[in-house]
Amino acid sequence: MNDFMYHNPTKIEFGREKENNIGQYIKEANIESILLVYGSGSIKKNGLYEKIIASLKTNGISYEELDGVVSNPLLSRVNDGIKIIKEKKIQAVLGVGGGSVADSAKAIAAGAKYDGDVWDFFIHKAEITEALPVFTVMTLAATASEMNGNAVVMNDETKQKYAIASILINPVVSVVNPELMATVSREYLVYSAVDIIAHSIEVYFTATLHPNFNSRIVESIIKTVMETTEVLLENPNDYEARAEFAWIAIQALNGLTPAGTEGGSFPNHMIEHSLSALYNVAHGAGLSVVIPAWMKWYENQNPKQFKRFAKEIFNEEDSSKGIEKLEEWFAKIGAPVSLADVNIPRDGIVELAINANATASMWGIGEMYTVDAIVNILEKA
Ligand code: NZQ
Ligand code: ZN
Image (cartoon, rainbow, N blue to C red; front, side, top):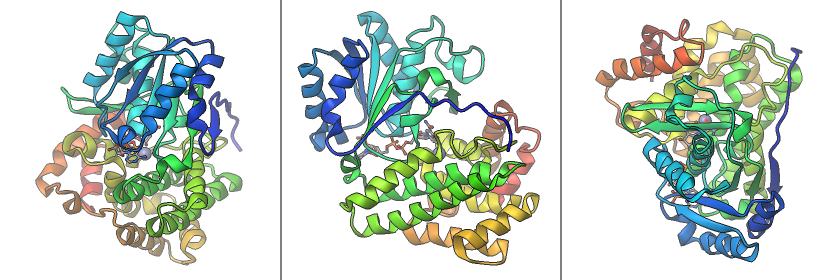
């Protein structure tokens, strides 16, 4: 096992009706004013908005609002949030929604403490040295944004979908009530399952050192996601399955699975972010297109781990069977598995590869993932 430092400062409040305590959690952190960030209306339809406001009022927390955060969240909306915070001297940010809302809340929190353009953090022109405290109430389980320091935002002008990562934007407290997730659409449930699997397999396949424990956590995550997804597709109100799904989503990207491994990278995410940036494809939908293609391209780089995957997940001896079975499962649950499935034409591949290669360079994997290599991968999709 490699040396590592593992520090996750986020407190998770997990369970039924915990959203009613959000005002209390914020007050306990000595905060009196927040910017409430949310999406395009789901929290108003299901009554969550009223509950949040009531909890804030009961605890004497004043608030301003920023609504309209979209999936593949936009830098322009993040800047709107930063402006409100600076004008009104607000102390913290509360995101109520899915990963797009949580990520926007985090970017706002970092930008609010910075005199320059928040995009500087995304292009590595500046480092986050300070941020406002972030709180979240999660309504969709997929990204683990509720318990990590990542935020992914799309620059609407340059069409770059880039990420920041800092422990300073890990949420202070995240409320995870699985019941709030019962209204997530069938399509987003499927995308979420793919995203969780993606978070698990990136380092599992790309690391050069694989402690058994880490591999086994990943295999457990994948098997349990597959089982619970199938239960939830049948019955979206199954609390036990919903709760396991929500907790697994968090474990898949809160720093646990790579701790002690070596040399892992996130090539599927690197490529997918370009599908989202240029074609506004949902993150999970882009991943189910990229993953089987990337696996076929990468298989020979780590044959032992691909063989292990096939055996542990699908009880198959042959590693290419493991890839085939995963692709079949994606298709079975209704996830897209080709560029055509998400309406991306073949002649869009080169532009996608150029866009993705820029991300690869920032993530330190530009040498392996040249434009040509990414074209090769996407040709398989
Ligand atoms: O906007 P609203 O009305 O809230 O609707 C959302 C949105 O349309 C809806 N939704 C959320 N909770 C719901 C619900 N609808 C009904 N009932 C509920 N309880 O679902 C739609 C999708 O929401 P979104 O937040 O976009 O989904 P997700 O959580 O999958 O987040 C995706 C974003 O996170 C980024 C992705 O790139 C993408 O931009 N990622 C963030 C990561 C991180 N912070 O660590 C890592 C990931 O790999 C990923 O890159
Ligand atoms: Zn992801």
